[in-house]
Length: 103
Image (cartoon, rainbow, N blue to C red):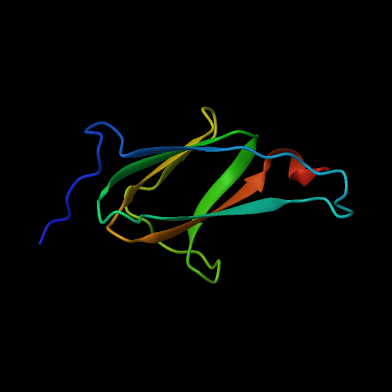
């Protein structure tokens, strides 16, 4: 059984990941984890546009261990990560902050 496509024929989802380095943090932050879930039973391509500089981005499982993800491509130059999502799939991305996370 094929999953219905998400609403847009181009890109199903575009996420903007914004954040700041809170001065209350005592330790430098070296990486962030972004967890997403598809909740409508659709399938398609997802594009994450990081709102802060990231270096390497890797797909991870729920325990944040490396995992395979269909269609996964990270383009550091444009600050985007794309992948294919299945119905009701939970996706975790681990991104290393550019500059070693200097807070």
